[in-house]
Length: 279
Image (cartoon, rainbow, N blue to C red):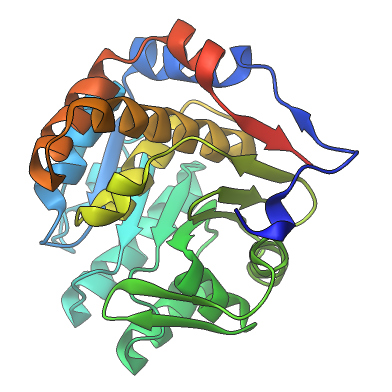
C-alpha cells in the first residue's frame, strides 16, 4: 500500500449501510446501462452488468444511440477499440445523455498510448459533461498531466502520489475520478475515498477494468452522489473478487467465480465487508 493511502487522523470508515443501500437500489430498480464499448470485453461487460443487478444494452450505431440512451439510466463510453464512427456515436449519445441528466461514465482505456486515444479522451471530456472518469493509475496520470504511462492498455504507473494525481485529475476535468489499483482512489477533487476491497487476481484477467466501469455505471444510475456511488461500486466489485479468489485455480476459474460472486453478493454482505475509508 503506498504511503499516501495510509490512515490519517482525519480518516474514517464510511457506514456500510451506504454501499449496501445502493446495491439494493440497483437490484430493485434494475437500471438500463447503455454501453458504447470495446469489442474485446463487450460480453464480459454485459454479463457483469447483469450480475450487479442492472440491465445492459450494447448499441453503437450513430443512427440509434440517441434513442437508446434515452431509455437508459447511465451511459458507459469505453475507448478500448476506437474507430472514427464509434467516436461520432459517443458524442451523439453523450450529448443526449447530458440533455436528459443521465450520468456518463468515461473509461479512457489506453489513453496516452496513441495520439488518437489521447485526443479522443480529451475531446469527450471537452464536449460532454462526464460524471465519472474510471481508469487505472497510468491513464489517470496522463489525463491529470502529472505524469502517467501506459503500455498498450495496461497501466505503467504514475510518477507521484496517487491520491494527489487523482485529485488533480478531478479538479482539472471537473469530474469524479475513480482510479483503480491496489487501493482504489475515488475523489471529486475535495472528498477522497480509499477502497480497500479487491484481490491481485483481478489484475491477471483481461477486462476487469472495463467491468468495473459497468458496475460503476449501474451504481451511478441510482445515485445522486457519484463519488459515493463510485466507491460503493468498487467495493462491491472488489469484494466479489476477494471471494472469487478463494477457490480459483487460475485466471479463468477466477473469471467464472467473479461473475457468480457478484451475482450472489447480498447487501448485508457489503454492509459488513465494504472497506471504504473517507479522508
